[in-house]
Figure (tube, rainbow, N blue to C red):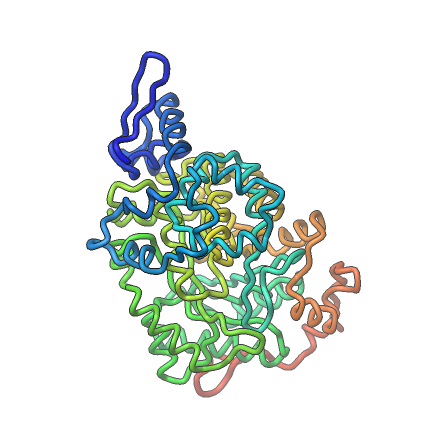
Length: 472
């Protein structure tokens, strides 16, 4: 129990609590330095890692890093902890837990069984002792599946969200981007639009747009308009065709309050979506997005390092059995993840922590234009995440989101990853792609011409009541 002490040569280091050890042991990143919680030197960082390795996992149950009475996320973590699932590793230290995770015998079934017994702080702690290859290996062994109209996260599969954002929410521009993505065999994760204008009427128009397209082509996928959860709830009340309910979430109650949400609201939204019964092969109806730095940007981090705060967000996600969870890893900017090296490390950490906690993880492999990163860095992270078994990635026309103004991955990037690693789309979606002549039996993209079935089907754009403008 605290304080935690380490001697390196003639220098002694003392860390007063778990929160401090976790922060000081984190790999260097600009957000922790901005928050004033980072190690002052490489030697102090190593001292914190040595101290962390010797801490028993059970200490994280006895010493919440944010007090139970102050934070509903802490209460969720403590109240949902499964002691029976934790039992196989309950006697281990953090360092021993790392070694246990890397054993041959610790396979997908074992990792699935212990997930309910792990807390976010435990998985964040062990990630701080791991090299990138360790994060990749363990995440690759984890298997988390979820389903709505198709099944995501199966071995040997890689799904893609089509993100057809438009700066004015123009129906023609959005529909063109969606069809473009479908022709690249993307869209099995979700067709998800970030609306330029977050209001109920616009959200309903966009929902009808995508729903009409999905029904026209009989696509085994799901739609989502990433408006605020309260906007989507009102759209449901007005009879809109909502498949997935979206919300950005964070790892502290005060950060979620800044987003205008709490756990009760998310529970109500999930119940409303389940009542619609729109899924065909599953009922995972929630879609969450996260990102390191969100708690700090809201001044709601409680002195906790940004990666541990991020892992706590996955406890929120886990509570609501989502179809998709997406770390938008480089979106917040260089104030939190300065360069390509920090973005790559954060993406691998987030994916590892989410999967180990039993969350179906995807990643928006992305960066802002003022970060010290470029598309080569994103290619590296994309390849590493594919090797690590990421459930899904983003597909954006030209890898350039013209509404949100950041750089991500393009439609053809997913085809590169599928080719290189022998990955395939979700099984229901793969069958549909073959039926429509998008791919052949070897999962190779087929040429697009004027006779392509996707381009000759009936008009997918909505018209009339509840819809947007019809196609010309």
